[in-house]
Length: 219
Image (cartoon, rainbow, N blue to C red; front, side, top):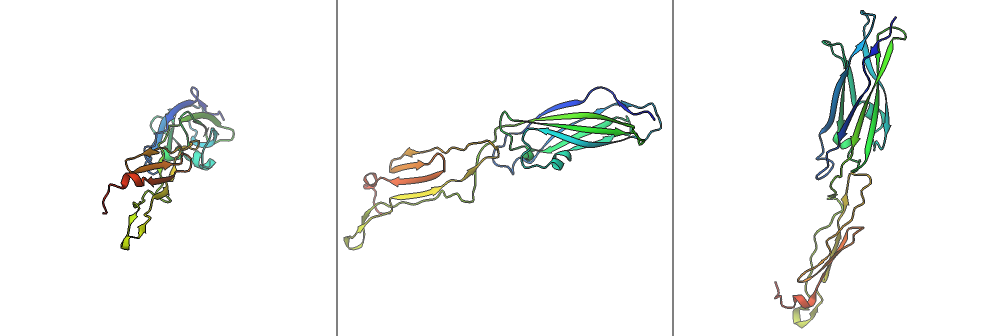
């Protein structure tokens, strides 16, 4: 029995993650690549088949398991040309954790067999995925962006009405990039008060300026 022999060397493809514009749900496309390898076998009547027998990742695979990564590669033999074909299909959101400048290299091993003992050959396909900077987003659950303040004044029977001089809440945000460090900004002075937001926690406070609101009538 003569073993099959692949023609040429392995394949290498570089793919770039699509930068997320809103949140992880929106990034629902796939990263794809495909190709083929020719091979020869002196035994013309052998019945060949090909399988993906392994994948070696270099870099952060995020929450994916080894089998999840392995299943991204599909292989077969073209009935017309007789070549080994391969197709990589990776969901974009599987790689959202990669930040700009991050790379994940996946080296797949393809094993071709002729159906006889010892009749095998291997070839590699290297998929390099480059990360992108995804946009941070506001998390609805836990975020409080509504508040109300009331000017101090005079109530019924000329009793002092202290009003409600402050309103506060918290903005909760997230980013699918694993190494992202979120920072909040937007503190400012307004015509009738000041708005302050904590750059780390997202906690905000609006403080009413009693002097500035003295000109406002009730209602």
